[in-house]
Image (cartoon, rainbow, N blue to C red):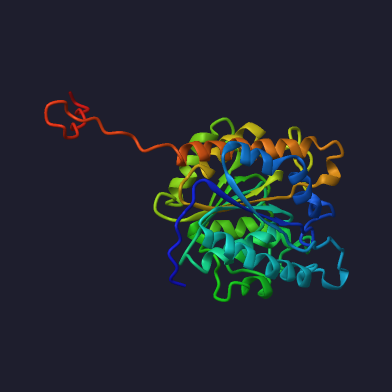
Length: 330
């Protein structure tokens, strides 16, 4: 669709996607409400953002669904995507940065689909400890959270692969997995053959800023729009246990914060979603506050970077014309 979108660096469009239908256990459907209650909107407004809250989609709940062991809860997941897609389209068209509070990992399909209505192509940074590249043929669990990225690049369950209409939703060379730590055999085989980029957590630890900048460079973010998917299980469980599948491998909280700052301050970021926070594993709300602080700090840097006044070019006192910059060789 030929629509001219004017990006609005001081605006955020917020959507809740309360779903655990694709997850490995119940609870993540409560994440949007918990993060709102922890003060996310108020912190974003205090930074200076104009926040447009587009509300929450209908809840979609975890179920065993043993009748469909290779792709559990698929009908509910597709319904959730159809609910989220028009809200995502509206947010992207507004020019605001879209922030989606999930929920499970499949929700990003609707966000990408909403953006693809207006953008010919979109790149994807998949920040996750897992590859999520299984398919119904290879899955050890049948949970579609472990197959979400495969569907995005055109592999796996036809109902998700064709959700965009003309797969792939994102091309393999335009996708990068960041913080990878656990890979199933079928996923490893795929990555060995695929042009999809991936960076292991061990290669990011302690040097997250340069790692994030390298990832942005590999996706040509200076010239292409992109999105970020943040699965909070990428943070090591010693520092963040309130995710669906916590583990000791991954990135430190500090590494994730440094990386997220680099990603979200970039002018070509269209949207990002936050997935896999589980309030049922966070009885005192400390995890929610930690997530809100993470988002507020990164988005605060974005606001300062993109809303800073343009540099003033000094003028020559004699001529009143801009002075040429000094040579680096002088």
